[in-house]
Image (cartoon, rainbow, N blue to C red; front, side, top):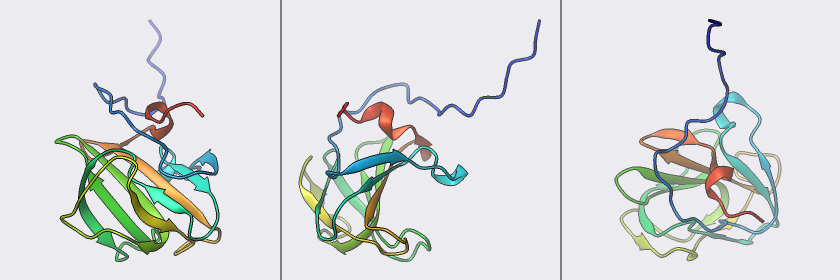
Length: 136
């Protein structure tokens, strides 16, 4: 019996979450190992960044190097979403947000292009965000 092949496929969460796209624009999968499950959405500076799902803001700031102005939303016991490189943050820690609510303005903090980096995490591990976002 052949040994199982190592896979770079993403971890799949055992359940789903209903998401909306957090921003309008051209999307592409992250290419670096640490960002391969996330999605970059190119857009224009100041364009609205929306909560992909309802939740609570658990981080709002810019102390994580390489992410710029970043928000992290907690959606339930398992799912978190990350929104990085924003020009302006519109919500603060502890605030509850609704799905589709504007939470930031797109920018280019700590990156060389105006874009949103969006990541979905399940139990702290990145999952393939494109698997959970609706088809465009």
